[in-house]
Length: 338
Ligand code: KG4
Ligand code: ZN
Image: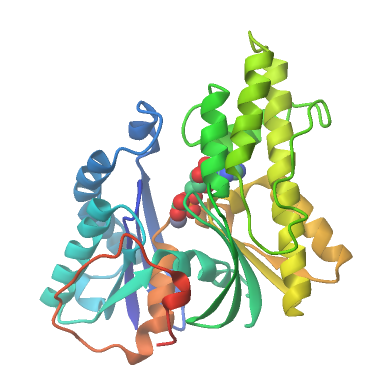
């Protein structure tokens, strides 16, 4: 069974082909980051228009590189939500029209389920159950994952998501969008301990997060150290990253303890952060647990995770009427097994 995956929830157009029994045959991605960087963040209308330009050529590209034809496709998985409504509608309308034309099922995938399952695309994937730390631009959640569609929310952010905090802090430091990779790079030359920022909610006794206060702390540092030297910017980036990483690691270990589970799966864009990976690996080893990540390119949005989630949900799907809607807001815990 060959599944085509289409991801258009935000500023990345991703497509992939996944064959059940064989694995990932091909994937392609077009990132709009440079287009949005001029505006300091994603401009939804520009994102939708660009997805329209990219999706079909990318599909043709992966079909050709995988030696497959449109007629070989058995199902089309696409991101139904959450995300930007206009951007989602582009993927939905193309996926449903193609599925109608090919007379195959369309699989409506939750974007976060895609992220959450993405480490299972790697060799030696973790068996269920596990704890998942989802850290993206829009979400920071700890989930107990019992199986496909069995997601229990353990903790959530009360305000900004981790990735959002990276992006906003980057702006304060005069770094380009997206902020995560830029802060991560700058923090490498920062002096650890030069500045100390709060560890929000680390001792709250629950598994929730709050990151919006950190940007105020960063703003205070920035205001007090004008004009910012390159070294001070790096020191602030390091202090910010240390704070976020310590909180994410502390809460993840608490979630493992709370659930009694020994496997942690990390996904979403912030999961690409090198310092976060090092600290999580270290803490997990100390707790006798293992951590699983997607490869770096599948931490951020991509079509492979959508094709894969589609393949996992394929068994029970039938060809529907292809009437569709998107879900810009959609709780992961509302999903059920296929
Ligand atoms: O998962 P993702 O591609 O999109 C959403 O579903 O939101 O995550 C994007 C987020 C952005 O906020 C970006 O700044 C952050 O992930 N990010 C990083 C890194 N790479 C991407 N944050 C920290 N360190 C990184 N290396
Ligand atoms: Zn995402």
